[in-house]
Length: 173
Image 1 (cartoon, rainbow, N blue to C red):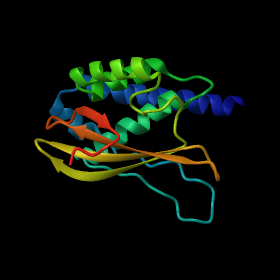
Image 2: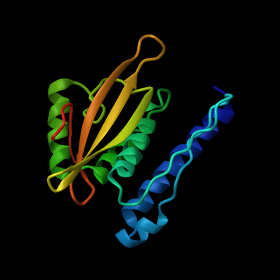
Image 3: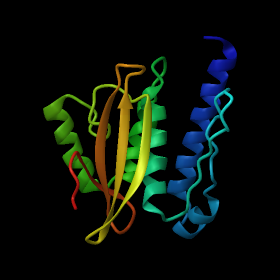
Image 4: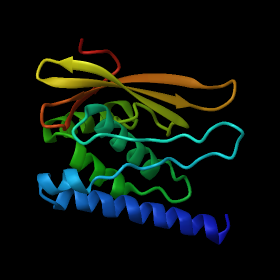
């Protein structure tokens, strides 16, 4: 790995940590105005470049933000950032769910957020609508590459205060 790649990773990690600290430290009213849309890095190809956008308070945006940052923190095979992954869990998960998730991980020997022992190569987040007093979002994780991919579909339930209250492999609907 060259020094440019290492420098970019450190800049990205620093930006993620700074964003998390700002989101946790600022009052709720200021957090909403401080959030910005992030454009995904464009791949060099003939296709049009992709983009990512979101809306403050939107369940699908919140889950996409969490999964994107969490996968980045866990997925850096040369230097995974467990501290950032833990901080993201503390910020996005309800305390009760975090405790249940830790028990699930102990029983299953896997990461409960990803429901796997490794990190996905791709992910997609889709709104699935209101469920009771909360909101359900579908996260589709793609593991592997080429002809050897495997998809896992997770149903993420947000409570009415926008914290993740559950992650299951079946819908609450």
